[in-house]
Image (tube, rainbow, N blue to C red; front, side, top):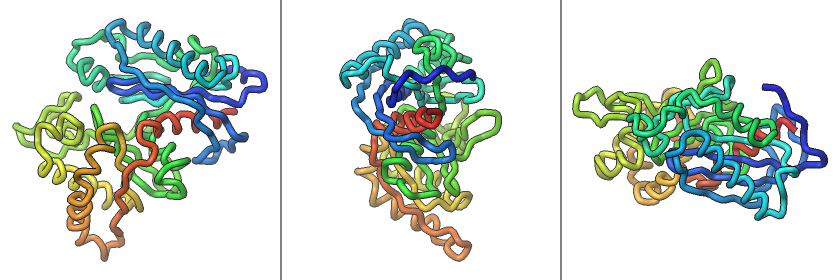
Length: 314
């Protein structure tokens, strides 16, 4: 994507977090110029807002909500769009960061788009192109869970940690892996959609919004918890974490997301016990027990991560 010119004397970035049901926006001050190779970045949140997304008017209607929310957070901070140097966007996936597109947003509108109940414009949506046109700024684009991981690493519970897994539990299940200090990505601009690891091959396993039965997301999203109950939920989450632990040997497992932050308080002790038991046989193989912690930044993590990305181009 062609870089747009930086706003004169600007030291602010505007970031957005587009999820299955909500759109968040935050205005950040960039404390200093950021080295492109840095994972963390010095950005300071000035103000933020969040709204429920109205999907009924298609992409143009959602873009109008971006514009109004961006204007609102700038106004709250005593700024204007002229003060914004660049824009960052964290979005639920699947996405392609190289093409700047949202590919097949199975959890938009709480999964209604996946069932064709909402306008098909959201599939293969060239959202970066539309936001560049809307704001006349450069737009940095990444998966929402990946942005949350960058946010937690920059200013949250994973600060200083080079090896961790972040899970965002909400309408869906977002995953992000930071290994040896680097965010793990799939090829060709795709994100690692590990929420669609299959945990059960049973014909009676819950149906995921992606169309497959038994996906981790179908068990571990907020609706999954309501369907299977606490005991089964903890068992499946333990199974999921164990699989990651033996592959990446992370130092930390960070649990975030709107639903995740709440449910972790209820299941923390049972989950830690279950993971310890599940990994007990791997100690001699070098897999140490990861520290399981709640995300510190909560709903602001994605905004912080998107701001980190946006600030790197300045």
